[in-house]
Length: 312
Image (cartoon, rainbow, N blue to C red; front, side, top):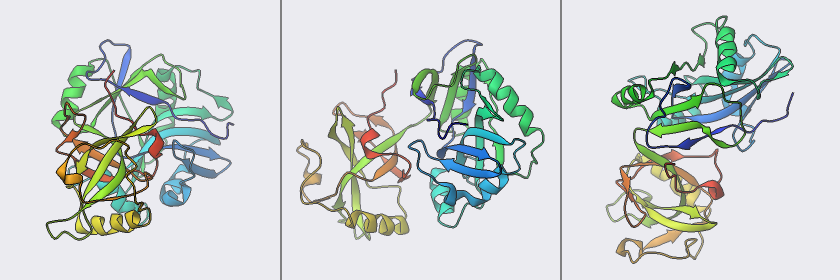
């Protein structure tokens, strides 16, 4: 049994692929985790191989009832809002009080009882995964992530209609590749991605903590300015984030080239260590985000990996 298998990542596209040889799943708004079950022991790994098992004790207990002696499962931990939709903000709130109420949507089976399934077609991996779920109680926090075959455009329209983040489309006969591949593609209903937090402005409206976060992305190893996010925070979130920012303040901007923006005259710069997820309407011609809204910190992703996501 491998110690760790890096997760397969999806390539961003503007439209879903056509054809009956594609499987289409909902795109979840949570934390991507690789779960290992071996001889009754459970481990949850992030994509960067950080051990997050202590954060998910309730889910780990549920995995022990999974009908296998050893398995590697790929899925996403999510929290749902009042309308039943996955909410990243709800997820962060839930984690502060343990993992009660969280569910683990499992969409792939990479290893099972002595057999590495990476070279097994996706449709067969999911068929076997669905069979295993037949013995799992509906009250369990484990969920089988189902799919439809073909009809990707209509599936995408329905997902957007119900305010889902988007869909992930996968070639039915594809193998599991530990890289970002074109056999898995994602299409988003709204624009949303990670940004490096490069600093913050001082609030001129009497808000506690900062006014807005200075956002950036890496371009060929260099940080590039991407705009400012001043909405999406509760007062409690502002204060908690301010404490983290105060610990990494530095005198100089980590962004080598800054635009001539009056809003950047009073900025407190920080070391580019924190990563935040931000929803926005579009990219401007200058390369800045329009109408950004902060969703939460991404502790599962490295700042150096954050680049501007471009549809392929």
